[in-house]
Amino acid sequence: MKRISQCEMKRAEAQRAKAGHRLTAAVFAGFFLAAAGLAQAPAPAAAPAVTFSAFQVIGNYNIFNADRVGYIPGTAQVRVDTITLVGTLQSERGRVALFDSSDRAYRKGFREGEKVAEFTVTRIADASVELTRDAKPVSLALGQQLRRPPGGAWTVGAASRRAETTAAPAPNLAPAPALPSDLTDPVRQLMEQRQKLLKQ
Image (cartoon, rainbow, N blue to C red; front, side, top):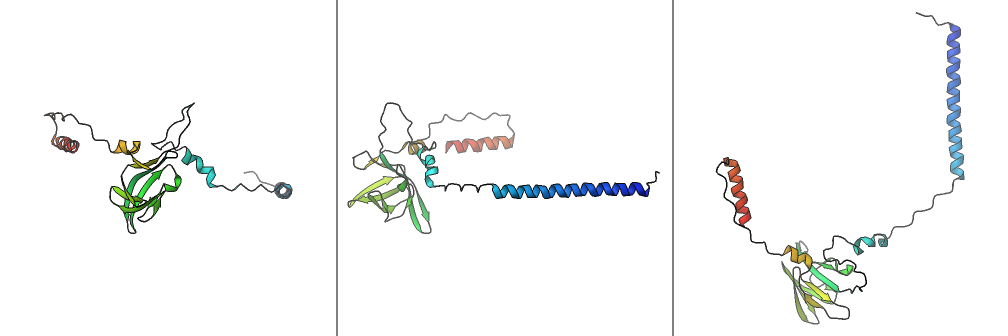
């Protein structure tokens, strides 16, 4: 084993000390330069406040709206006001009629006695709503809509495209094919259950 002399040990300690001093000096220099840079850097500009108008594009161009109409070049878009009954809800605080509309103010739930455009909600049933306007009752079934062309009067219109797709009658299905005779009992039971469900 090699013996290290005292002289070599002192030399190694001196080198370690010099390296430590250099590292300490570099760290202090870095802190000093960083502090000087922060003092001279201009304050960052405040971020502009985010308002509702920044998100308005989502409602205006909602690609999931089944009633939206694409732009047709050369034609003027005529806005028809619509208010569609999309559902009813029973809660602890009473019944609520849920509406969708071309006007954002009416895209919400209304209770009996509240006004929807020029109409007052008088009664809410499971699948319909009774409205009154100028003491005249108007019944609106689930999926039906009130329509008003520009300068015209409100009328009860046909069901919207969304309601037509959900209320379409089920197509007549062909009779189920006979089950093969080589099926195991569990598979046969599952297939029979499926056929019963399809017939309902």
